[in-house]
Length: 243
Ligand code: MG
Image (cartoon, rainbow, N blue to C red; front, side, top):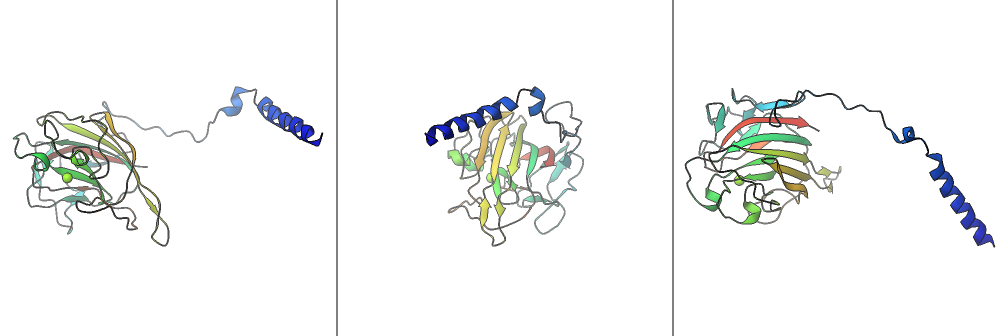
């Protein structure tokens, strides 16, 4: 008998809870109101709250690893890797972010596989989204353009031919570490290549390693790195929004 009373009471509580929401206003949330950003004329243009990292006029937001000025070629509104000059790093360190980057593989097609139009964009100087001329250029799938290098194969190959510009729109969620230096939350990467989703909230396994398995050292914010992999890959219109 007691059991039935509990059931009836339970049904009563549930139905009362449901009955309470009869007004559509009860589930409307007004605060906080998203702030207004002024958007550009295209999805490639920086919105008003973005930090410009390269607008074609100078390379002042960047430096080499030793802090020296960038020794890449700046011409025609783009900057191009100079073989041997080394990678370039943003002077500012970043954590969670949305990064827009436009790149172009060398027009003169040279080399095969990993030796054709190789560069890379490293988030926090540790996690590489591969840049490679993967237009009709087979290599290992977890090393082609748009791969999270040696960790995640891109969902599709969205390459344009090498004479055309490519866009990456990258959403990066940084991994988190506790006070003891233990990773307590993985990082994630979502990437659109030329507007096509190629990495969908992919879990970062750790640092990008060419040899061996990813590592998970504790770290905070870090610079964005563009890699010098000896090939003259060009860049233009780079901007970032902190999240
Ligand atoms: Mg690379």
